[in-house]
Length: 89
Image (tube, rainbow, N blue to C red; front, side):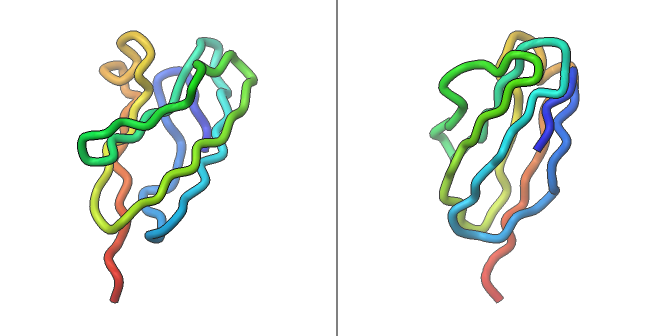
């Protein structure tokens, strides 16, 4: 997954289970990654400097999750996405 200046490049869906987000800041500003786990927000412990990388591991069940960069106004500038986790078939 890539964080650019005011864009998050990532898949639109992932399978249910433990998901490991490998995150790279390819922008020129500090960024972070936050996922709303239906009321509990999980994010990187520290903002990523340009060129920085980090990993965030979460357990996801079926549903839709809000992803955003919680730094400043970055989310309102376009750094927000929806992530879909399909249900079991």
